[in-house]
Image (cartoon, rainbow, N blue to C red; front, side):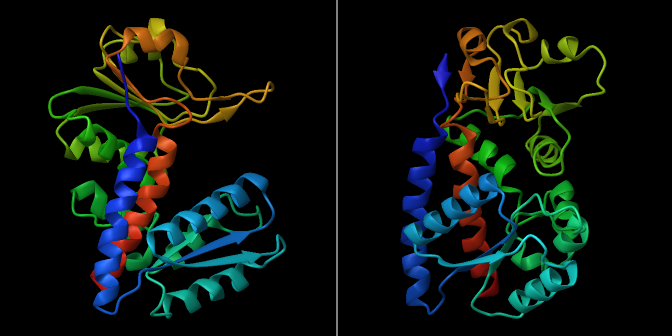
Length: 280
């Protein structure tokens, strides 16, 4: 069993991005990323601060915009319109979830597709399904980079994706399909889940349930990617995979923390650089 170290890979990628951004700045282009946070959700604040720090580390101009929880949808849409028109900003990210009175879909669609560094705009989602997207959702893209780093080729593998969210499950399915895998996507309504997971060569789990994937649900030698992150009552961070029992049975596995998580931010920075190059 080999650990897939996303933390080490993210550091390597950030060093490469730093060099590329230094070169780009010599051509008069400084990649700019705007992150909008609406409200005071502690987890969202932590994520936004981490993105802000990581941007500055690699030389990206970071603009953090914090809005009160009672911000109207119209005010948020106007903020996005201003950023769409701002030539110093190449990437726009609205931290989710948004307060309940705001229509998330409308907000995402308001972001200019070429500045949509989350890859959530319908135009970019459509391009992903055809394999032509330049801006791809960060977490699934991070998974693909991990597989590439460890020379794991999805071509011909039976892959199982647990979770059908627009942020992870659906784009993950498309990326694996585009890479030549045979993909089964499972979710909370899937019947005979164990039957499907136990025949998969590669399982990507992003279902939001602590330690949901157990050792008796996988076959010997399976590759396990754990996208989940959950805090137990004890305070311990765990993934959606029961790591202790699953790890001895598989060939490769991502840890939590230190697996997919650090790659999500690294891919956001990479998307911002791509957006700046395309605009520049």
